[in-house]
Length: 311
Length: 236
Figure 1 (cartoon, rainbow over the protein chains, first blue to last red):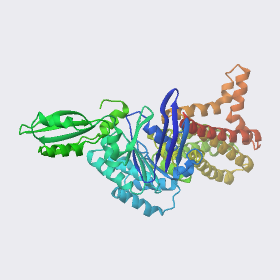
Figure 2: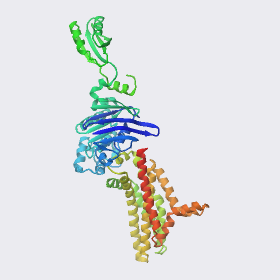
Figure 3: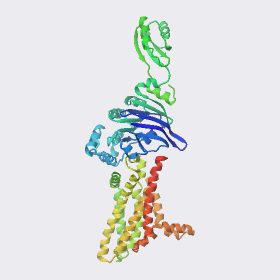
Figure 4: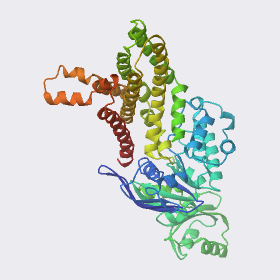
């Protein structure tokens, strides 16, 4: 659905983005993650036709944004970081304006009503935008992006500055939208990506440094696999026995519970999963396992390792 | 394009700008017209009236154009219209036409109203009257285009207004400035750009093609330059 190839944007001598390439399939919710100033907004602005790239191509549904700007723009709904609201208009007038601006033919009144119901702003239709709260304004911005039922929706930090309740509402709304739209979402809030997106693309200093499914975060972080296991058994023999399991790189006591059981942090080299041999060995020795949990890569690990921070 | 035009027209009248423009235009133009023709009992003195209307543009046109583009940039709403399926030319033209509708509409209505007493109580030359109206409409289009261009250069509407006042004043008083200029080269430039001296031909019922094309070119040039400003912002 979206194909970006070797996209570069320079401001003078500085690269805002440098040789960025990725594709987004139809129906995916992709989280575009990166620290402030990493190039997220620039990439989105190019994709929506607001900015032009210095080099490279951006395609939506097989059409180049520079060669077919009007057709591509019809397929995209965009919510910039600051919602582009005409604050002197009522919500209804604003949405009707966007409807006319996008030359939609979906039945104006019903279409706008449907969108307002979806984003839960039906009660504010007659209100002037400047009198609305930030949360409502954000919703009106989202409603604007949905006018015309575009196939691709691009949100630039949609939950920025909202209170926790509003954040949850907006995230749920985006998840709903993801069921029948392709969504690209930029954020620097890590938990947001994990709770909403199918896939994350991490950008840092204008370059893509990681691109993986949200479920595959374990594989995205460099280093060993870790398992935290709580075992009832002698504190000296258990770790020695674990160490002898093929693939185990190191064992350390994480917590001594003082009731004859300890938690051990077992690290295995590379991609080796030691949970099964670990279970068999402990069972054979009659050392009951009280709990066993993989210490997966958190999204924070992935992000920090990708952008060059400490894990 | 029509959506943007309608939105701009609505914006003029959802705030004070449209009303202030119309009120000032009718109050001042009626005052000038009364003092030059009715009070003097001189039905042929309407040529000077049109010259004053052109001068009135110095404060009236910036009122219309100062927010036209600058406000969009300041409020970031340009992101909405630039990412909508509308060409940059369409955006610039829609805004131009909205401001011009207000100016042209007010001027045309006032010109028709003022013609009635002239015709009823005097013997105005219709050709010169119509010629003058057409010339002022052309000059107004050029001024609106200039105002829109200056508005596109800044996010500050007051800076845009002051800039427009300065440029329009220069174009209107270029001939007067000539009196104080020694350089022949500069005098030629001021004569060439002077709007009022070109208007004189129309005032006396002469249709001057060079001036006609000058006014049209001025509008086209500044509309083109405004599109370029939008375009440049995308590439810079």
